Every structure is written in structure tokens, then in C-alpha cells.
Length: 367
Image (cartoon, rainbow, N blue to C red; front, side, top):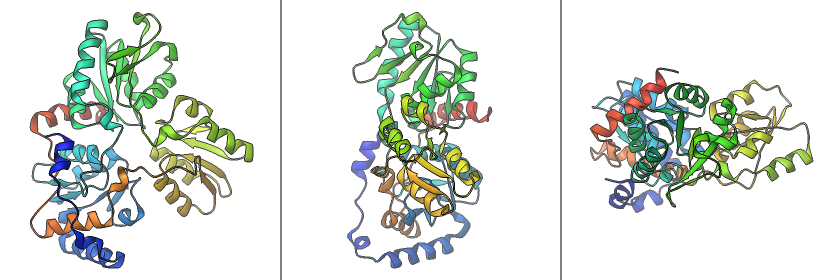
């Protein structure tokens, strides 16, 4: 069943949750957490709203949280406060008896949805005809279970924004060329740091089903899937120019899902974890403009009043799909568990899970 089909079959939030006060909902969540104890585990992604993140047992990035869920053997119920692909990864890595729940099935990821399995298999067939058996696929963990499975089946691995360079180095020891899914910006920035010039990178357009490249195909070393993060792509070089026109002391740090031009002009680029650790290690009074998701930036600003921190683009909205998870949906999912009517369970089929595990394990072995 596709994500869209699951969403269509998911009941809407009952009206009564819209009439409860915030205090009533918060108190009920606390009661349920206390009653379920170790049987319940709530991982919360960094981009979640404060109203949700306050109840997280752990916060982190998607893979980190899935790994923590896998280590949490006493937990029967894992209520993943993130998006669909994150809950899928948790289901792949956890034991069979553990039930993974996504509080709102509409919480997806536009980037992950830019590469579906049908598009990928078509692209692979065309690229194999063009380049022969010289390509190894890599996929960002921000991808669907079916894409992870495809990559695992074809000898490739997953990558995170923290280890993408190391995994690219490994991949080039296996094959002459790399297909990087689904985020072209992380792929381009990582390959460039590895020493691959831009003129040796092509882009596969899954909509037009063609390779965008002006040179000789033999020169291509990296094939970038034409996908992107709708949040990080909105940070621009104009944002950087504006910050620097106001104060040259402000350091600019961005996520590598930003465009190549933005990453090149920033002072620092790194994963969510790297951004958080960089700010934590910075001296009091230092000035920062951060180019990543707004919920996280606002949380960093609150927790580091000793520094002068702003968003690189103050007009940015939070990640809309990540923000589908809210307090009413969290409470609803927990009350369903208490009533023995688990809803919104994320379950990856066995074959998909096996090959996706191969892709994940190849990465984890090199962590």
C-alpha cells in the first residue's frame, strides 16, 4: 500500500480533541506516559514543534532516533514524532514485536516523495543502458523504505548528512560512478568536497526521464537525482549578502541540503547535529545566522541567550509536513494505544525491510 493510499484510509482527528485545552492535553499525555512506563518510547526529531518535543524521551536526527528505538528493547510502542520515512526506518531496525506509530499519517517529506520506486527503476534501467555496470546507488536516509531497499538490492548504501563524504569515498572504491538519491544538493555539495568538479556531475530528471548534462557522458562521475528539501532550498545567496551587509562579525552556518552556491558562501556547513554542536561550543557574545529549519533555529535561540543568533532567512516557515505532528495528534495516538486500538501503525513489508536493512547496515558498518 502506498503512503497516499494509507493517508486516504486514515481517519481524521476526532472533533473532541479540538475542544480540549492545551493544559488538559498535556496532563493526559503525562498520565499516559506514566501509566505505560517503559512500554512507551517517544522519539522526537529536532524539527518538531515545542508542544510535541517537550514529551520526547530522546531528540535527534532521523537515523539517530531510529537507532535509539532499536536499542530500546522494553518498548512495545514507539510513537515516532517525525515524518513517514523516519518511522519506516524505525520499523526496519526494531524487533518484530515492537509497534511503530506515526501520530499523523500526513506527516511526510517532500524530498523523499521526489523519488518513488517506479521512477527509480526506470531511471536505473536507462542509466545502466548508458553507462553499463559502472554505477553504485547511494541514498540519503531521507528517502522511502522502497528506495532504501532498491539501493540495498543493488549493492549500495544509505548516507546521512554527517557521513555522506565518508560513504561517497567508500562508494567510489566499489564503482566508477555514483547515483545519489534523492537530494541533489547534498549530493552535489558532498561530491564537490570529495574533489569531483561540477562539470563531472549530471542530473537525472525523473519527470522528464532524461539526463541533464552538456558534456561527454564518459566524463560523468556523479549522477544527482533531481530532488531537494523545500525548506533548505529557500535559503539564498541574497540572504547571505544581507546578513553580511548588516554585520561582518556574524558567522553563517548552513545545512548541506542548501544549494551549492549558499554552502560555498557560508562560513560553515554541517548536519543538524553539527550545527547544534557548533553553536554549543561557540563563545558567549558570538554572532550567528543559521540556515536550517525554523523550529530548530528558534529552539537554539532560546537555549543560547548568551549568543546573538538569527535565522539566515527570518521569513522562513517551519517544515510544513513535519509540523503535521501536533499535541492533539500525539494525544490521540497515545489514547488509541491505551484503548487497544493502535492506529497509524507503520509497517514495512519483509522483503523491502530485508534489502533496506542491507543498505543501512553497509553504512552503519562504516560509522
